[in-house]
Structures are given as structure tokens and as C-alpha cells.
Amino acid sequence: MISPDLIGKSSKPVQNEIEKGAIRRFAEAIGDPNPLYRDPDYAATTRYGRIIAPPTFCITLNCGVIEGLNIKADGLIHGEQEFRYSRPIHAGDVLTCSLTVKDVYGRNGKSGGMTFVVVEQEGYNQHGEHCYTSTLKIIIPQRKEEA
Amino acid sequence: MALRDFQPGDALPELTKPTVTKTQLVMYSGASGDFNPIHTVEEYAQEVGLGGVIAHGMLTMAFVGQLLTEWIGLDGQMEGFKVRFTGMVRPGDVITCSGRVTERLETDGTLRLVCKVQAITQQGEVAMKGTATVAVLE
Image 1 (cartoon, each protein chain N blue to C red):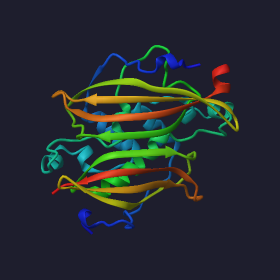
Image 2: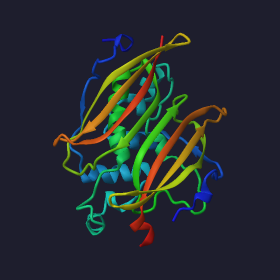
Image 3: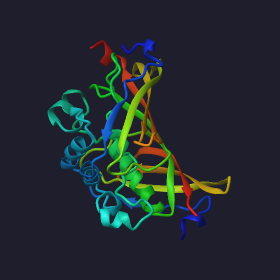
Image 4: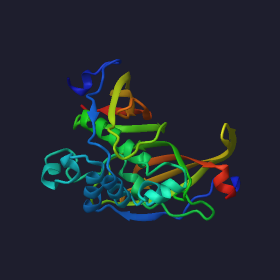
């Protein structure tokens, strides 16, 4: 059982170097041919100037850990996802990312009890500018917790 | 039609993605760092009662991200993107992404377009739906 005591707890921030190869492999995996994600010469002709990351790329960044919370554990259901963007993430940026537990609550549904965990991740670039906030709602079926 | 000319009710150009494959799920696992075996290990996915591997919800969200960025082009910047996962996507599925502008907001001299978006399977099942907000650049 994930404890409601975790609400408000934050991870120690982690630095992420944004590599153009990682962006290209992500774009290839999602099948998005946009040259902004792989062609530096093309990107240089746009207002971005450099390769940028696709909108959902920030989900791949390391935001650190909170003891007692594994958001990648088996049996979890990703229920909702929200991104708020202040500025694009460029290849070559260094993003400082962290996560905070915003809410933990239980609910009884048709298929038994469930725990909902709301986690917020934030990333700031090397200039200290906010790039993104990602909010995940994770659903943990009770039977998984008891197993 | 230029981005700034979109009105409430106007549809975004649809995007139908190539068939989702198991290879794509392996590639996405590697590229995203999400190695949950329900996406890649057939025996495991069977064992936990999923009837086979399922796609990452975030892969479907990335498809709809492509719908949005192709529509926006260089004329705007996405500010918000929020979705709810409502169904499972499996290898062999063909996902079509679509959207519609619902609002035009003008604040502090910036035009913002709010749209509803969704991803549906070839069976017509809604796998994901949500909203996005786009700032239109001068």
C-alpha cells in the first residue's frame, strides 16, 4: 500500500543531458518523421535553431526517486497524463528534473478497491527556466497490492 | 488553412499511423526507458490476464502529439496537453488520431486555440481522449 504520508514528498533533483541521439531514437520509436527531431541543418533554419524534442519526450527523463514509491512497478495503470509546457526542450540542454507526490487516495470501484497516486514532475533547463510540468495519475488495483 | 484562421468546430487534419507492431513496442520501451514487461513479454502479459502484450499509453499519446505538432507546424507552440487513457492498444491495431478546435481565446494579445483530441482503433474504440492548448505565434 502506498502511504498517504508520501503526499508532499519530493525527490532529490537529477540532471539530465538531452542527447540528440536519444531524441532521434524516441522519434523513430513513435514513427514521427518530423525533421525538427533529427536534422540539425533544418532546425537551424527555424526559430528553434537546434533540434528539439517531441512533446511527450519529457516522460523519458530521470526525475529521481522517492522512497516507498515505484511509479514503474508492475501492475500499475497509467490513468491520466497532463503536460504543461513553458518552452521547448533542445538537444544539448541540461534539464534538472524532480518529482513530487501531490495526492494519494483510495476509492472503491466495481472491480474492487483502488489506490490513486498523483505525481508531478518538473524540468528546468540550464538557464533555470521552467520547461515542463508533467502530471501523472496512476491507478493501483488493490488485488495487486495484496499479492 | 493557416493556424490562426481555425475556428471552433474546425477539424484538425487526421493522422492514421502505421499498424502498431511488437517491434515498435520494443523500440518504444528502449527509447522511453519503460521496461514494464506487459508491453514486451508475451508470456508475462498472458500470465497477468491481459491476453497478450499491450501498447504503452504514452505511445498513443505520442501519436496524438504528432497529430498536434503536424497541425501546428512552425506557427504555434503547444502549452498544454492532457489526456485520459480509456482503452487498450495492441499489436496489429491501427490508430487514427483526430481533433477539433473547441475555443479561441485571446488574452494579452496572444491567440490560443483549445482543441479536443482522440485516438481510436480500427474497431472504433476510443483508446485515449483529451485536450490541448496551442498559442499561435505572430
